[in-house]
Length: 73
Image (cartoon, rainbow, N blue to C red; front, side, top):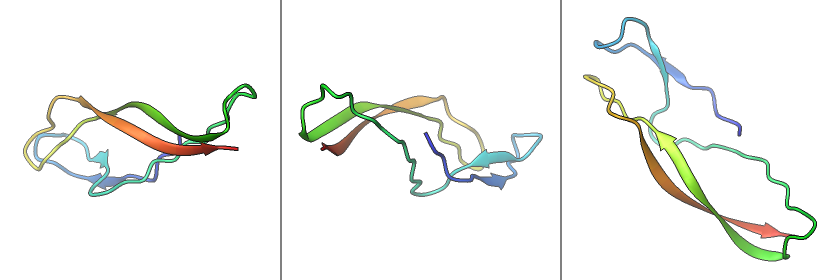
């Protein structure tokens, strides 16, 4: 998994600045199909763990479902 560089922000509820992402963030992952994988269009499903914060508090961590279309050649 390759994450972009975060931004560092100070929040009233934290002693030290926190590394965060804002808005839309692109995550990259390099995948390699097994030789037995069927060629063609596929969907890779999973979950992404996230934790939202605002300028007052960080909320409980949660998960988001993700579905990534890919093509196996």
